[in-house]
Length: 111
Image 1 (cartoon, helix red, strand yellow):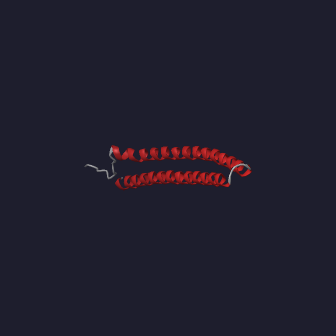
Image 2 (cartoon, rainbow, N blue to C red):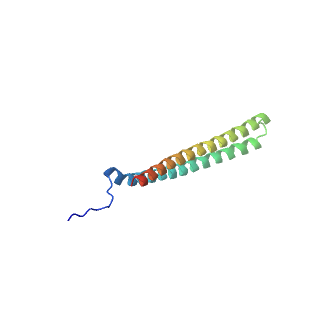
Image 3 (cartoon, helix red, strand yellow):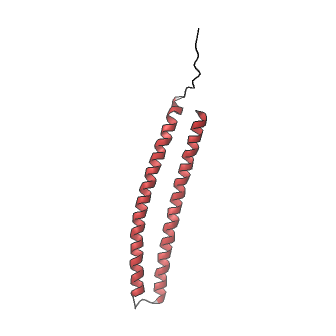
């Protein structure tokens, strides 16, 4: 009399797929935290610099109005650039997470 087992056996590539996806997700989360911390630190320094320059230009009696408006525009452009850079990086991390989610879904389907 022979007994057959009905347990599904996974191929070696399927067995490791889930743990590799998890390891990649952890690495991506770490990179995101590092980026957030670094970006916030740099943004804080830039904001302090912008405040200092803005106060200096406002208090300067010898600086013409055109130069003051130029400095205000320069500060605004830096803020816009910083915000758009942050948005682009956040979107990239979102795409990477979506890709890992799709891999997880495929790994669960094939299991």
